[in-house]
Amino acid sequence: MIRILLKKQLTEIFRKFFVDTKKNKARSRLSTILWFLIFAALMIVFMGGTFGIYSYGLYPIAQVGFGWLYYAIFALLSVLLGIFGSVFSTYSGLYLAKDNDILLSMPVPVSSILTSRLLGVYFIGFIFSSVPMIPAFVIKFIFVGYSAWEICAAVLFLFLLSLIVLVLSCVFGYIVARISVKLKNKSYIVVAIAIAFIALYYYLCYNAGAFFSDLIENVIFYSEKVKGSAYPVYYIGSAADGGVLPLAVCFAVVIAALFITVYIISRSFIKIATSANVTARVKYKQKEQKVHSVAGAILLKEAKRFTSSPNYMLNCGMGVLFMIAAAVLMLIKAGDLSGLSDMRLGDLAVKDYIAVIAVAAMFLMISTNDIAAPSVSLEGKALWQVRSLPVDTKIVLRAKYLLQIYINAIPALFCAGCVIAVIRPDVLTGLLIALLTAAYVVLHALFCLFCGLIKVNLEWTNEIVPIKQSMSVFLALFGGWGYAVAVGGLYFLFDMYLSEYLGGVGVWVYLALILALTVLFAALFYKWINKKGVKIFESL
Image (tube, rainbow, N blue to C red):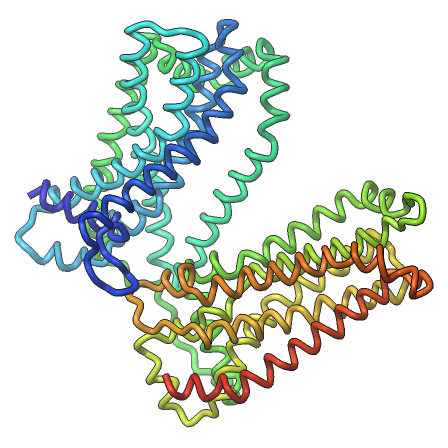
């Protein structure tokens, strides 16, 4: 029974490899093999290669007798990556799986269901936790040396690490599940966790070089600090380095923790699994219901669709965070940027180039928010609902691009304001930067809806297809990036060949031309959507 349930669990986890979600048909054996090979190449070549580079940068500390510290660092990275890779599987596959009610209604032992779910979580955690650790072992063995026992210890440590990840994933998954059953909108907690791990990943990548250099130069100081204040980390590193007693003690502690975790889960599994749709009770209070206009109600529907889907928010709305982060970073580095903007290289005004590059960078970040691109396809088989409403099609389409404008506008203008405050351009140039930002927010929203209308896919079975794998999103994303690159690159030609004929009037002429062009494109897309776009939507 456990074997059958485990096979079902792994098939669900790797469903993308077995089923073509665009056509809702099973893939051929060759296609399935190719998908697994692509996945293996991604994990081994890209992620494994990245951690291999990090391992190569740190192996000198193992050469001077601090192999435990070398392994401890990668063990911590492995645990973080393992939890990130499996915590969502724990949350959705162990506690709040969609088939919990069906399985619990069958004559299947709860222990078999729980065991198969735990094995599925373990399998995913093992894959992700092995990616940083295996390159660390390989690099150390190649450049420092190895013995037969060290190879055996490395294999045992991989299993130990995967058990640590399993325990922590169950704990975090349990916390997430307990919180989510009390929330009406569970997508926010998924988005928050994903953003936290992404931020941590980029922080580690950004600071890795400085950290490695500092660690190698002060390895004795840091090793004493770890032994003094984080002794379990020292013990884990010693276990990976082949220490017999540390390895045995770590296994004993982790296995004990695993038994306790499984015991607690088994006692609360049914309660959590059958309370997935229970939210906190709220005492009813009579109050007036706010009446929305027709346009407002349709816009609210689009907003709820966006905020109800973690995939939609993460893949089509991350640009908001990019813009806010870039604005804050500019304010932090204001002194360096303002000093640079005051420089001149001969007849070249550095401030002018910085202004254009900043505008192009904002265009790039705005382009990552392509909310309107998949919005038509996301109607899917429920398209008849909006089509049956006594609402003008123009209002329906307007809500789709207005949502993207509203979400982009405030962070984009905040970012533009920070650019103006830091580089301190003249009044006209500053005004043009703000107007250009606002105009491009409108243009890109209209362009995204244009792409969504010319490349509609209503036959999807998984929402990730229109959100992430559709031609409409591809065109919207790369079309926006292409426009941003063109705006930044063409100024060099403008300054080189046309500026002298215009009497050296400065960057404001170029920005004014780009503004006029942006407004023109926006007007053309607006006209197309209200005529041709309406006909396309009504014919779906």
